[in-house]
Amino acid sequence: MSDKPTATSAREPDRTPRENTILAEPATVEACRRDYEAAADIRALLAKQR
View 1 (spheres, rainbow, N blue to C red):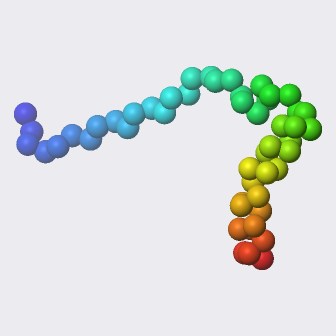
View 2 (cartoon, one colour; view 1 turned 180 degrees about the horizontal axis):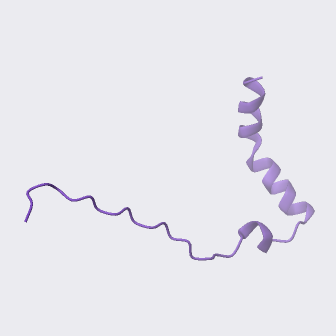
């Protein structure tokens, strides 16, 4: 037996297929409005960076 530590393999990421939440919801005017309102702070931040 060696006193040197052995390299452990990195854990594989979980690649289990999952339902796409974007495609699962129909593209309605209401859904688009919610998305637009939810991103208001992101648009403001991007506008400051110009």
